View (cartoon, rainbow, N blue to C red):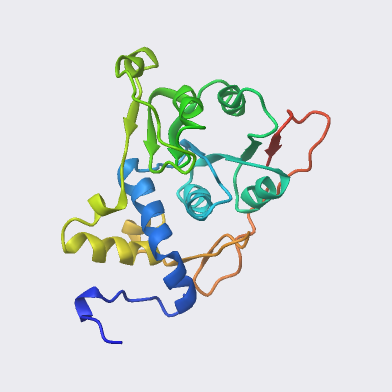
Length: 240
């Protein structure tokens, strides 16, 4: 099968073709969320719902890669363990807590998150909104559990103020230049400070706990493996 050269995506040599092909749609989505919807900065705190899902796994890894603290939610011990293994600093089992927004705020010492990435929709929207810090942003990029009901905009002012965005991938691929740039960046993600070295470092995204690794390097082995639950751990939460 032949395609126009302009539509082809260069794949870094160290990224297997099957990984590149399987990661493109979800990788482009995760990329625009952390680089356009809200450009994640070192030291910020981000919330990732459905952290064991396809986009969620990438968001957790990208958040850590960009220097953020990641609060993740997932349903059930296995999914929570997966999110923790990908680097999430705190993982909340939403099935095990009665007040999801309260658990998220507790994980941030009451400060809230700078940005909430929510692809779940109806079931998590209210908790996402309530978890934002002042002038925080909720990026609602999907509705896996149903659409969000109409929102009174005055609530955004009363809450902080806070912001809500409803981005989608086609709007980030509107011109001929945007797809090529986003595709390259989805496979060649720039590390913080890379501009000082004159080029972007290449990284590989791995699924299922391998984490982000520099091309040709060893798996990410940062300090802070997920700690087991103890009597001091709040119900439904894992901490690093």
